[in-house]
Image (tube, rainbow, N blue to C red; front, side, top):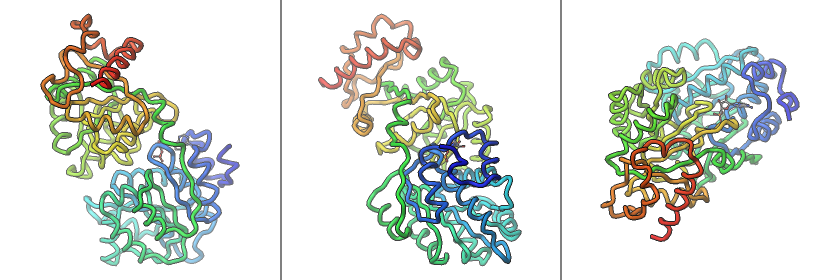
Amino acid sequence: MSFKSLGLSEPILKAIQKKGYETPSPIQAKAIPPVLEGKDVLASAQTGTGKTAGFTLPMLHYLSNNPHPKFRPIRALVLTPTRELAAQVFENVKEYSEFLDIKGAVIFGGVNQKPQVSKIKQGIDILVATPGRLLDLKNQGLLSLKHIEIFVLDEADRMLDMGFLRDIERVMKLMPNKRQNLMFSATFSKDIKKLAYSILNNPVQVEATPENTAVEIIEQKVYRVAKGKKTGLIIKLISEGNWQQVLVFTRTKHGANKLTKKMVSAGITAAAIHGNKSQGARTKALAGFKSGKIRVLVATDIAARGLDIPLLPHVINFELPNISEDYVHRIGRTGRAGAEGQAISLVSADETTYLAGIEKLIGEKIEMEIVDGFEPDPNASTEPIKPGQNRGRGGNRNSGSRNTGGNKNSNRNRSRNRSRNRNSN
Ligand code: AMP
């Protein structure tokens, strides 16, 4: 299967070649043909599957081959839940349309609207937007959606999680009834299906490779640790492993800030990215992280959603998410495009139930390890590993961080023993 055989035009193929893509990803191979045929599409795909090109490439093909006869109205709208995702989708639009006469703009809140408005006034074909700023500019009479021919709802599940349902409904009323609709979502709850039913007409359903395939190529590991020792352990792992690009997840914004400060004090360049940060700070942090200036990016789930960071070698869950599916989303950021990745979780006693839920979801026990000096708190009531059961580790007492190194087999055995111990408790 090649991009050419999908029927995309030469200028688009040239841009794809420039990006270095050789073959379409599964979601692209499945979604591009029906989108080119003008059909509505409901796609099950998360970030990392190549879904953005999956809708952008055929959209560009259509718009460039069917220019508006009189002027340049906004003809395609991509709605995304977060500012970061909007910026990244727009970045892709620009790259893929480099050799086409297509113009686009991106709008989101938290920044001055003036440059966004002036870009729209110059005439654009594609608008990438978050719901709030879109409705805001529409209410000020600064844009019109009357000529929309293609509507893309990206990360629909996260849209609903973030409470955007009413806004989506408002946006729908501003567009003509006759249009093509594409909806992407990583999960399909009852509410998502209801939304899909209200937006899409007789959609073709496509699915990316099941999430488990991605999970299989990621080396996963759990470090059991006392809650109060997590910061020390994460600093040790990053320093001694000499990890240069690490995405760390915390459950709260406050936690993200606190951890970032401690890392910086320990001499590790780090930045936090979450909803309370200004857009400028977030963009700067992400750019620094991508360029290698910042080693550690500490993020909350919502802020990290949609971040396009290819080939991420290390993801660390400083805290486990309480929703098991979020674990799969988080670790899906490593091991992309066939590259190997490592996903590590620091788990304290009070997270035992979350861990059990995650292991049930992914259908496997995650390899477990304890680092000397960073043992779990034996007094914590939900702690499944009793001190007496750690004997196998005794000989390593002074070697500490060697546990984190290459001796995979013995780690695996240890992990198996631990699992057994855990099961017998
Ligand atoms: P997405 O799921 O759209 O966020 O894309 C994830 C990453 O995969 C991005 O860094 C894309 O540039 C990259 N990508 C998309 N399509 C392909 C492809 N066909 N071959 C290789 N990389 C791709």
